[in-house]
Amino acid sequence: MTHRTETEPDSAPIPRRGGPVRLLRKIAVTVVGFALIVAGVAMLVLPGPGIVAILAGLGLLGTEFPRARRISERLNGYARAAWHQVRKRMGRGRAV
Image (tube, rainbow, N blue to C red; front, side, top):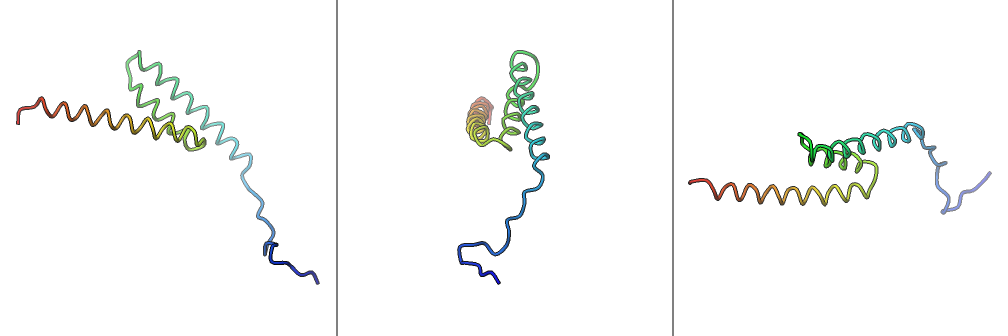
């Protein structure tokens, strides 16, 4: 009979599942995220919502990469502040 010490876990470690699926998901998120960013940059000079596409691409990349999440949160903060300033200026120009 073997006795377990207090430092040993009570059960064997659970094997990780979905290794290949996780890798495929990460690759798909990376490809689509970068495609959105490239399309967004193109839309900055072409008609279309370029900034929205860039933020969407960063948000998507942020689901898999912590650095992209930090950049996305920072840029979203800047975008919200800029939008608040625009709304504030538009409110001043209206007759009340």
